[in-house]
Each structure stands twice: as structure tokens, then as C-alpha cells.
Image (cartoon, rainbow, N blue to C red; front, side, top):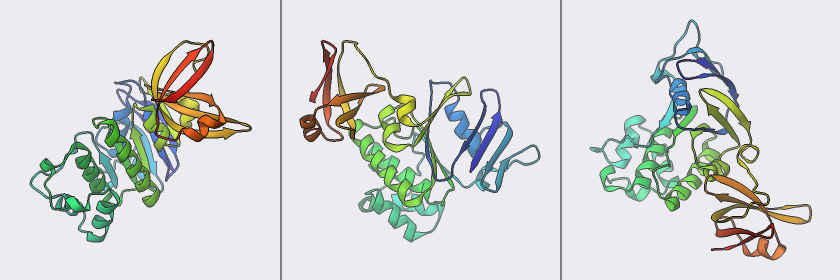
Length: 276
């Protein structure tokens, strides 16, 4: 169990996270999301208590140094060593060649192991950054909008890689993200912060899902899930920054698949969905 009860100039919150969970931190810019990650990592100061399992990170009498917290932190800007190859960037953290090879294979980067970071695309650099963070065998992986600068196709690819890494290593992962489809795909819990306080906490579906009722609209979206509920089928579609549930026919359920781009519109209060 990870127990966090902290206060500083931005934060005033108390929460618990189960070890091995994949949790999203969401909220408006300036709400305290990144500050929470930095306080947990020991990069920003706060008062209160942080305990990870039996290890005390922060208390009235104890402050564990950054290097002793065993946390992997992935930023948006990669922060790689440009004078080192991909492989050496990883081995610099931990000279475990077996783990290095496994991570590069899992992230489809093994063929780039001798390349320098400046020769890689943004998505490839971020894969290296994620691998490097995992080389420490961290107890917690922190992702601070790590995928936000990538194009949609590369972002989806990296989301799948992250999910596979999480399942393989079972590391508690805390991710700051504004993207509802990303949160829905990856996480089991969303914590929404506003002005440094928790204002919502629950499953991605409960926190993020909004239906549009009788509003007239026509939008492009992406199918995230198709499920059968009793005798009907429901598609969950990401439209911009919202998720919507749409009742679909049996034929539509057979025709559509997760990842399809679709057009969603209403006519006479009926919702229509078709592939783009």
C-alpha cells in the first residue's frame, strides 16, 4: 500500500494507492498533478507523511533522499544522454544486460540499441526513456504526461507497450494525463485534482464517461470498447476530451472493432454511428 498525506504551497491531499495498480492523475493545468509526482519522488518538498509498503519516504522525523526512493520517473522531454547509445543509456543506470535486452525487445527497440538518441524519433526516444526508468527495478513508475507530445498513432503504440510492461513487471504506475482515451485504455483508477485537492476518485468509466442525451451533434471519434449488456451492444467512443456510450445494433457490433475511427451523429434524438 502507498499512503500519501501531504501539504505544501499547492497540495493538501490524502490518498492511498494499492501496490501494482495503474493510476491516472487528471485535472486542469496548475491543479497540482505534477507537483504530486515530484513530492512523491522527493524532488519537491512538503510536510506530512508518505509511506510505500514498510518504507517511510516522508514523516515528521524522516526525509528519504531522492536516490533512495527507488522510483522511476519519465518526463515529456526524454532527458537522455546524447553522447551514449541507446543500450549504454540503459546500462548506465544498471549494468544488467539481461534486463536491458528484455526491455529493448519488449519496446521494439532492440535493433536501435547502437543508435544515439539524436537519430531517433520522439516516440523512439520516449521508449528508451521508459526502458531506462525500468532498469532500476523501481517500486513505483511515475509518468508525467510522457506521451503528450507524440502523434496519435505513435501514442497508441506506446500506450500498448506501457500496458504490456505494466502487466509484465507489475510495477505501481502513476500517470499524469489529460487524454481520456489514454486513461481509459491504461488505468484502473482516476484521481482528479483541483487546486491541490482531490475532487473525484473512481474508475475511468465512472469519472470520465459523459452521455450527450438529446443534444444534436456530429463528431469524429475512436472506438475504445464494444461490450454486450444483457441483449444489447454498447460502444464506448472517445470524442475529443469526452467518452460516450452508444447503443449499437448487432450488425454494427460485428462490423466495428476497437480502434476504428467513427462518425457519431444524432437525428431525431437517435444516435447514429458509422466508420469514418
